Image (cartoon, one colour):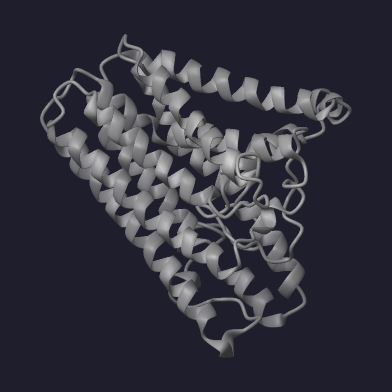
Length: 340
């Protein structure tokens, strides 16, 4: 994934990082940077806060749809579908529909389902649906979201359906709805390069740019999967209870899964750009920048680093690990308390 104000998690150990800490809290945390606007929002009613979130979501998603669209309404519809899916599932998650207990259990899996739905709809309505680039990029996103969605869903089920990010959000119906709304924005903006490429009538043959882009994607996905696998295996060993991982890829980066996440969306964007034929379509390259900014400055690394410092900050072994291991980029990244 404010003033709709979604605060950092209250628990000392975040339960589900997105790639892995979902980006639903990015708007609130950006707005909480001490601006006059944020202070006004703090005094506003919950309905005003939600309306601000809704306005940001609609303006940004529909604005990008206008810039990146090939003269059709396809992207506008997909942006609305992304938010609409969140609202439909919210009716159950909130308990409004079936009077069940309010739950975040289906939040992340809904995000993955939304990715898959947008990709499928964009491909089914695409000119030249069987163009190799469109098929390969669509398959790349579907592979990623199926893997990550299942991983996160199994993880939250292991924790009894509880995600500490929602501890202070769930009691407020409108804040809870705001989190779901922002997830729709996150899905649309992140997948935009592929949506734009699929909607484009311009389908040049595959070339070196696609080879480079898909190679970067494959490497990034492999790093993310391996990092998640290593961390899951580490925590599954009772001997590692209350310990931090510093093995495998985690000896090269303190957040290798995030590094892989940024890489894979960069690779997808490189390949998708081969199909861009209008100046506005280049705005879809906001996708990897958006992902990187969220993970580096908002809802990923900062939250996990604070939690790790709180838990192991006095441990000499952790201090040594932090001093020698790059925050994000293996080998050449900055160490210690650097952002990345």
